[in-house]
Length: 235
Image (cartoon, rainbow, N blue to C red; front, side):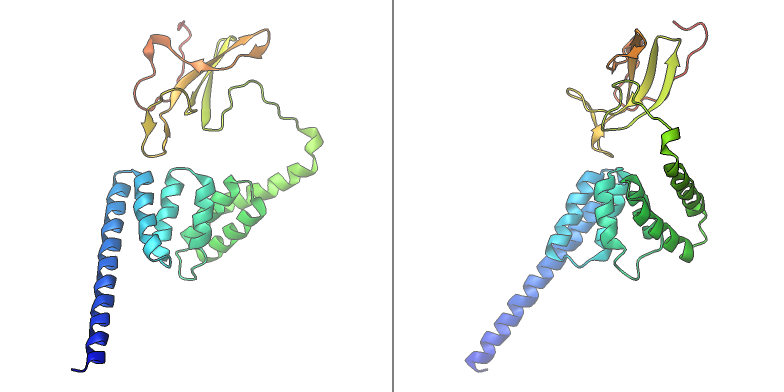
């Protein structure tokens, strides 16, 4: 074998050896990501999937897995970003257009969301978009009469996170669930946000005060709390 032929052969060996190593690393990272996904550890699943994309960015299936993680974490900003990539693939599943529309709607991009709801409806028998599309039309009607509706923030309870399930206690307070960030919270690996706790906002002189953690009988535990209700004889 001539010297030039030997060099060529060695270069081929190095090239294929490198490709095999990259392929093995990608396969390992994807498996690690899939395992984390199965255990609802979406933050670490995303890290593994992103390592796969770093080696080879042109992988629609991996992008879809990342988009699904952000959807399940309810991170609508990243969810929109990744589903925007996913729906570029002509062969993508129709449901991804629905998920993309959901992200756009959550981020108040209603016209763009309507476009993808309609595209999903045209290729699927799924009835979910129908009510959403009708609701969008109703909202458009409401916008024309905005002077007839006034919405006010009644108190300081609203946070950037999830605040929901209010329960009014007599006429003195409102108790609700929130995963707002506070000092040294326990973090839910699923959402990477604090676990849901009960908060209370008392009412003084007709106005609600800044909420505090509801401390009755140490009701807030180490995991998610749920909505509350009260009997007439409570308190």
